[in-house]
Image (cartoon, rainbow, N blue to C red; front, side):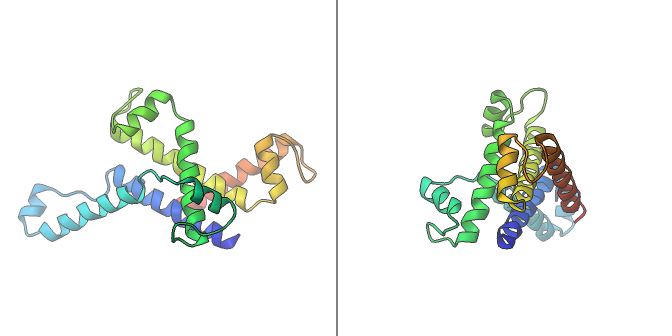
Length: 182
C-alpha cells in the first residue's frame, strides 16, 4: 500500500510539474538568447517539452489494466509502475468525464472551449487530473470497505454515508494542501 501511495505521489508530482510548464513555466526571451543565453534557453524549452510529455494522456491496453487491478506487472513493467500508470490513466479518465463533451474534444485538438483558450483549458484539465490523483491516493489509504462505501454512497465503519463522505473530502483537502506546500 505504501509503495502504491508513493507511486501516486510521484505521478502527482509529474502532473504538478507539467501544470507549471503549461501555466507559463520556463520561458526564453529574445534578449536572453542573444546575450549568450542560448544554452539556458534550450534547457528551458527542453524542460517544458519534458513536462508536457510526462503529462500527456496515458493510454493503457486491457492487459495492463487487468494487471494493475491485480497488482501485477505487464508489458515489461513492474507492478508498481503499472499501478502508477493505471492511477494516472484513471485520473485522466475521471477528469475528462467531469468535463463538457465539447471541452474534452477541444482539449484533444489543443483548442479552447467554453470561454477558455487552449492553455487555460489545458490548465483546468491538469488541475482536475491532480485532484483525481489525490482523491485516489486518499481512497487507497482507506479501509477497502470504506472506499467501496464512498463509491456506493453508503456508510461504513460506524459512519453514515454523509459523515463518511465528509471525512473523505476533509482528507482529500488536507492531502491537496500537503502536496501544494511541497
